[in-house]
Length: 408
Image (tube, rainbow, N blue to C red; front, top):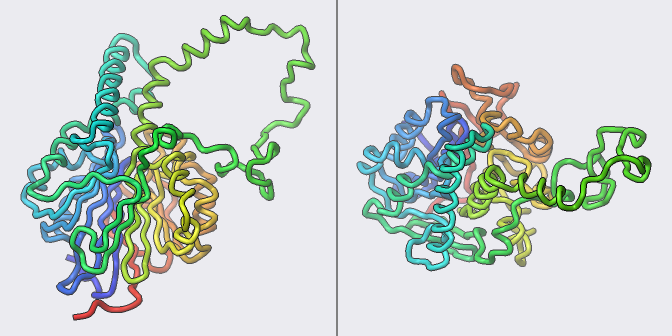
């Protein structure tokens, strides 16, 4: 087992494919306590390393986890928990955390979950009769492949199970002395939970120097003379209102429902800020705009972001998961960031402009798919690892030195 310095916090990002698996190791008087944040991979983007990742995490923790966090009910974040249930049941786990939307005793959560399961069942029947696009199939798989993992986490492994919402705090998170926790999401307000798409002014799609939210801020790939204008072509056929509504309904049928459900579950992600000895680590799950927007409106949100030391990039680096205002408030060249990602099964992920912004803003940034794994999609490896980072066989480590030692 790799030795950790007594005053060092370490974040280990495993390369599992399209999924998340992070191990946070926090100092204690007797060594380090270990927190597993998600453990899953999408079945269509499994590169064959998750079993080794689970084994390594258990070896690092010596089969004792202070905490397991399941950020939200998606296959690419939870499937490892059920696939390797036998191994997990040999571990000692103090606490398990999940978002309030998975609480079996919460009436609102039960109602939301029942609607979600009914919609998933409807989609499965519909897609069995009419083959959908590959991307819609992948979205449905991500939704439907979590029931065993959720049952396993609900069972508690003889540990305390907590269902958390925005505003929850703990002075000794999972019993770890000196480690505080603040939950930033998900909110209770359904208005925020329903917001999944970033407004144009929050996306990394602006021309250099364009004002956020301005009408001319969007990227325009064609000169004006090539942009269609109905006024310039009065004889161009216009769809009757009835046909327009019919097309909108078609666009919003089964495949649209699959993507909408997928985004809604992402937006229920548990967003946690861990703090230890003045170091602040943000794990955002796959939170989308409504989740972010809720806590960005809270007093002190800007100061919180300005003090970040580490950011686990949301939703594998997709377009909709890191608002510009949030990233621009993070301390330039003073925080590190990691993203677990690869351009399959969704080629639009990660978003190139967001990746470029992270590379420019962070003191150190790494993406998991730059670790070479035979037969797996890859991105170019960095010419030199940023300060504080190191590389293992199928993981990257980032180490943060604490500002003072734990008292004996």
